[in-house]
Every structure is written in C-alpha cells, then in structure tokens.
Length: 102
Image 1 (cartoon, rainbow, N blue to C red):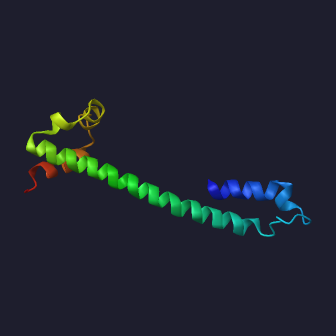
Image 2 (image 1 turned 45 degrees about the horizontal axis):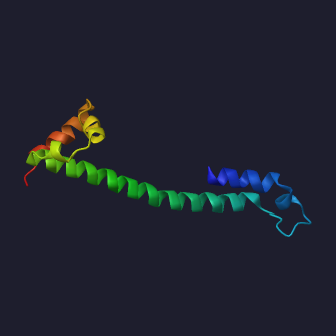
Image 3 (image 1 turned 90 degrees about the vertical axis):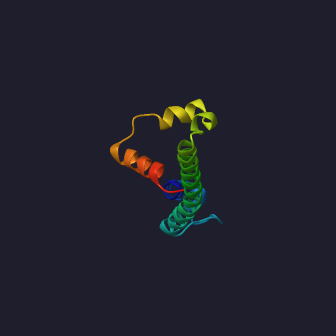
C-alpha cells in the first residue's frame, strides 16, 4: 500500500512530475519500489512483535491451564476467546500442550 500510494503521488502531483521542479522524479517506479521495500521492512518488525506476543499469551494460558490456575489469571475477554469452539487442529495442539512433560 505504501509503494502504491507513493507511486500515485509521484505520478500525479505537479511538484514531482514537472521537469522544472527541483523535486522532479524521473523514475517514479524506482521511488515507489524503494518506498514499498521500506514499508515492508517496517511492517515485518511489527508483525513479528505481534506474533511473539500472541504466542506468549497462548503459552502462558496453556501452562496456567495445566497448573489449574488459568481461570484465576484470565480476563473475561481472553476466557471467551480460549473457550470458543476451536478447529480440530487447534484442539489437537491444545491437547499436546496439556500432555507435554513439564
């Protein structure tokens, strides 16, 4: 989206399309490609952090459920999410976590 928006700006705004402008962009595709790469690089970091947080929450829930303290530590919102009927694969993973040695 960032690359597309950059391409749209550098190909439609006179500031970047006019040969007389000091901000003229001769190759808008290259500029859009660099912008897309930068957006992708930044978004990967945020998605990795989100993934780590989600996995940590699920791990803590699984260990708390194994210890029998899950209900004490869960908020109502989290309780409704983990008690929601899960697909078969998620249910199998949950069972593996519960039976794993400590």
